[in-house]
Image (tube, rainbow, N blue to C red; front, top):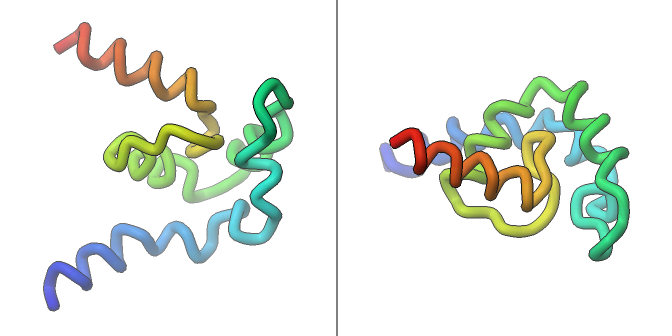
Length: 84
């Protein structure tokens, strides 16, 4: 029961996230398409930091999470590994 409560609390940001009020096409664009609209929405979202932390912790490999694209999250992971 405690594990479920922790998980639910950790995901509370999803309920009020701006992405929950839009379609997935912004956040999971076709390859080569722009992520600009998704990043703009993320920039205005109160859950952006929690979203990015979730994506990094769960190794989300597709879409825009916390305002970063797949490539940007990979660069961030690589930089963190290098810094140790």
